[in-house]
Length: 251
Image: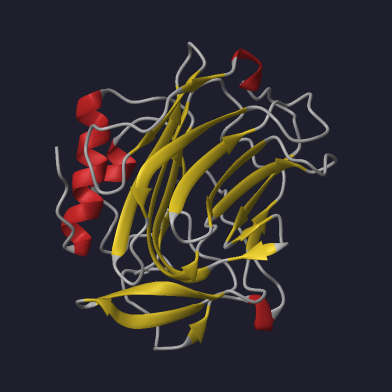
């Protein structure tokens, strides 16, 4: 693991981290790259070796300096920028938590996880348009649409940092923590068949939904855990992200 300046930050002290991308330190050195540097493989601070990658230079996000104060971020062009991690088993367990911080320019689909041999996907987490944030949870046995989804009532404000948390607990309840709030949840849905078994050949896409629809915006953080957290743990991660981005979190 990198010995960069973020080695002791909060997300890796909370149990279960299987992917941790920091848009301000995409090389994992603690030193931001030069402005407009194309990033082939954002560094995974989790230590789980789940870094997504992109071998085609024109499809790599650019690191941009000073996007939120002195913090940089990864800029996705909304055309074809995307990363993929094949055989991603980070959400294979029944419980998981996903934390995302982003600034939307026009449309943002920051994270998509799907079964590689199933066109409809297993689990999809992305923004539909730029107004309402929806987390779609598709059943692993489904070959078409369906499954449960949790919906946030709050609109996504463009051109400012937004923080969202999505989780599924062992009882099958699916939650989406409201935009820039600590505890308020959107619609809660339950789908017992939604647990993802190990060996499901999951592909993780960052910056697109299955390399089909693409993100236009800046990725600040993407952090995934294979457990659900206590309220205190969850709030510590949300506060860490908010403090680093200068975002106020309502209770």
